[in-house]
Every structure is written in C-alpha cells, then in structure tokens.
Length: 274
Length: 274
DNA sequence: ATAGGTATTGCATCTGACGCATCAATCTGC
DNA sequence: GCAGATTGATGCGTCAGATGCAATACCTAT
Image (cartoon, rainbow over all chains, first blue to last red; front, side, top):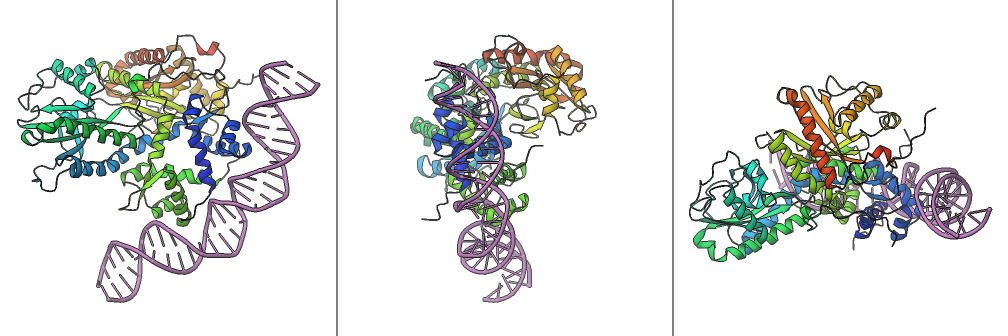
C-alpha cells in the first residue's frame, strides 16, 4: 500500500542476496553474467554495481575465476553489532519466556574468563525482587548457564580453564572435580541443554541452553532457575523451552544451524562443471 | 587513484557502516537525524534510504526509541561470508594458545585491501575487557598480522597495495616507507613468522604467522600481542608457538606444506620489471 | 581463422536520488 | 495551558547518476 519503490538500492541489495544464495555459495561465487541473468538485469549495470560493493568490501572477487562472493566487510559489520543485537533481541524473548512459557526468572549471560556474567534478567511480575542479577558474576562450573556456555569445549580446554578454581562449593550436588564437570557437559551436549539440580545453591534447580552467533560459536546462554519445589517436575519441559528460545535467538544472530565444529573438512569449492 | 564514483549506493552503504560504529552501537542505535548529521547528508534522504534497508532487513528499528541498528539480514549474510572452516578450526587453536602456551591475547585476522580485519579473538581470563577486537580493522604495514598476511608478496605488489597509504604512523618503530616494510617482510619470510616491536602502538609488541589453505595461499594470520614488559623476553618463543599453531591450522585446512610461491600464483601475474 | 564465452566501457536517455520546504508528532521549559 | 525545540516523514522540482544498448577487449575451444 505505501510507495513500493523499485529503488536502485533495493536492486543492488538483491545482488548481495543472490550471492548469498545456496546455489551461488556452492559454486564458490557467481560471475557478472550469471548474476545478471539470475536477477534479470543488464550485465553492465551488475558489473558497475559490484564494483562499488567491492570497493566498499561488501563483496570480493576471486581473481582466478572472476566470480564475486560476499566479502569480509559484511562479517565485520555483523561482528561489531552482534552484542547490540543480542541484547536487543534478547529482551522480547526473555519476556515471552517468563510470561507465557515458564513463569520463572530468566537470565541471559555471557562467559567472562571462567565465570558467568549476567547481562539481562526478566522476572515474573509477582516475584520478590531479591537481587539485581544484571551485572552479577557467578561461577561457571556449578551453574546451568556456565554449563551451556562451555558446551562445545573439550576436556583439555576445561581442565586448563578451571586450573586453580575451587570445586565442590555451592549446592550439595556441585561437581567435585573437572572429571565430574566434563561428564555433565557431555550430558548437556547430548540433550542440547544443561540442567543443574542443587549445584549452585541448596534447593535451586535450573536449565540453560547455548546461544550461538553467525560464526557458530557460543556467545551467550539463556537460563531459567527456580526453587526445586516449583520447577523440578517440569524441568525437562523447561529445558526444551529454553533450548528452543535459545535457538530462536541464535537464528536472529545469523546462526544457520550447522554445527561449526562439524564443518572442518567440508565445503571444498568444486570447479567441476555440472 | 582511480575515479571515485560518488554513487548513491556508496552513500547508502556508508549508513550501514555508521550504524556499526562504536558510537552507534554504544548508544543502542542511531536515529535518522543523528545519522544524517554524522554522514553530512539531508535527513530526508537518510530517512528514505533507511526505509529501503529496513524493508530488506538490513537494518531494523527499535519502536521505542525510533533508532535504527544493524538487522538480521546482515547476520545472515555474514554467516555465508565467514569461511566456516577457518572460524571453526581457529576457535580451539586460539583457546589453546592463550590458555596453555602464551597467556596473552590471540587474534585471527584476514587481509582486506591494505588493512587487517580481526575475525576471532581470545583473551586470557584475567584480562580487562578493553575493546571488542572482532570486526575491527587496523593497518597492515605496522602490525604483525599484516606482515604475516603479506609474507608471500613481492616488492612490486607491496608498492601497488600501499600506494597512497600513510606510513610512519602508530608506534615509534613503524616502517617509514615501502622499502622498510619490504625489508621487514623479507625478515619475516626467513623466520616463518613476523615480529613487531612498538610499530603499531608504543609499548606494544607482537608476533604473527600466516595461515594457508589447501591451495597454499595465505588466507589468514594468527597473532599474539602484549605489553612489551610482559612478552619481550619470550617473543622468539612466542613466534615459534604462533608459527606452529598457524601451521597446524593450515594443515586442518588442507595445506600439505608445498610452498605457494612455486605454484600458480593466486594473484594476478605481476608485470616483470626490466 | 571463427565462434561462443567472459567482463568492461562509451554514450544517450530518463529514472530516481537529492535538497529544500513543509508538516505531524513528541518532548522541553515555563 | 502555551510556545519553542527536536524529532522523523513527505511533496515536489531539479539534475546527478542508474540504466540499457552497443562496442570493445580478452579469453578458450574448435
């Protein structure tokens, strides 16, 4: 209904989208001709537009095959804006989780060293406002958020990270050593979300899931925690809810769902003509 | 300098860059007016351009504050732009370097034009969180990463690349001209890794080594940087550690150890000087 | 040599980006 | 309440610049 501008800018952006299509990526980029044909535009214009994009770093050209593909500048934009977007997109998701799905306190946290820093909190309306958790740091080894943030790490990395950190503090079920911690990380990895049962504090249970950005790495964790008597019997459900919310947040950060750790050795651009 | 087209497209893209600037990110996005002032353009045009960007998902607007920020589409593009194998394989290697070998901040960077873009960062746990380096660009001629990324280039190529780039800025030992830069590149080539001593910033030293893909060309650089008083006396060791880590990363990307300079050049054939 | 593929460039045409002006909607301070 | 400041959106005349055709150049294959 509003003015549907054809707009040269929109046409230019369509070129970027075309270069990001699976087809173009699979071919290791597209040439001017192919791109023009795909977009139904003249080659001359595509050539000129792509030069501007290339000068600005939004696309780059393989000197060998003369094909264009998305450039690292786009990566730079996303990397600089990722934190901002995490916070902005996190708010609504936290609210929805607490109001519609779980009714318990939800946190969004990031890893800092071997500790967990909470950056966003959403409490149910009727909750007693105990502590302001935003900005608070807690240990990573006996919290669900920590477990989620460490979910990709291998044993040796865990060991190095927690060298000199005291274990067995907190709740009665806190992991006693790195071995126990790694076992529980493996459990979380299989489930896709982490569960803790009186590890951080007596009587407290929680579930958490990792949030990934466009690079595929874990950059944050979403978690819910509540007194055991209120949450325990629906903790698996809560874990699933947290996981799907975390996945939704990841998707908004450009995560395409492919495990980064599984990509090693994949995608060798084949020059073989179809 | 080739002809610098003003090009409405370039002006539009500058808006995206402005939205990804530190200032804009820190303020949680910028409004139309502020953006127009920053770019020296008319509010009307910024308003209209941003609407097109918003329709395409490249930016989105916070309904509360009416400010724009980078949108989901950029993150989706970035996921395609990132060389997933490089990022995926790089993460663990960075963590191991900082936690086990060096205890200082490690970066993984790629070359973009005559500048260096940092794509991954790993800091030691105790580090004060200063700047988010991911996505940041720095100059190539006075950084160890830049030196490593240029390690295969010949003099003529260096000269062309840095035509018009200001030398002698940064730290006290920054190279004053192309001649000095090329000399130091030769030194790095012999050692297999690059060292800089107060070239980028006073009091800062660093070491870097090139990462090669299966074709043998340099696609990235691994580097460590730290205050001189902490790293200087073990800088040769750090260089070796960085080099072997970079070689390991290269191996994971399919590099079999054959020198690229003997193969078909990945770059345009340089004109032979008489 | 020709033929078919690529990408870039010169140039005339006319779209659409531009800036000025105005207008609506919030925020200010009093 | 008012007036003034500041915000973003829009109508419109103008000309920069995006467009398309055609010409050019440069490959590889036959």
